[in-house]
Image (cartoon, rainbow, N blue to C red; front, side):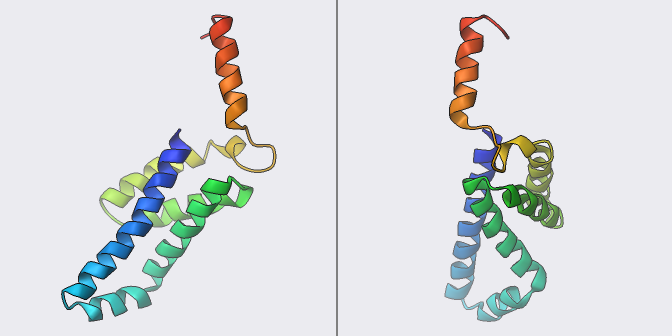
Length: 122
């Protein structure tokens, strides 16, 4: 569940950056947009967020690595994005079994939960 919610946050961030850019442009802030687009740290944040979202949705091995890098960059964006960066790292670092060719599938988890309920195992 944490991986899905982290994907939603990343998607919201990408859409939010688009709305923010549009609002700034509408109210005469073209120079702010140009400075934002040419800022290497902002380009890295946006690029890694897009790649992390794609990696989370496809759950490929590189998705976790890119997600960890994106969360590391989010730590520099105080205060809200710092919290998301910390939370993302707490989710991704121990979540190696959720990515790659041998990942745990949702149907396997559902079957395990059902089996544990039937056998009254906590």
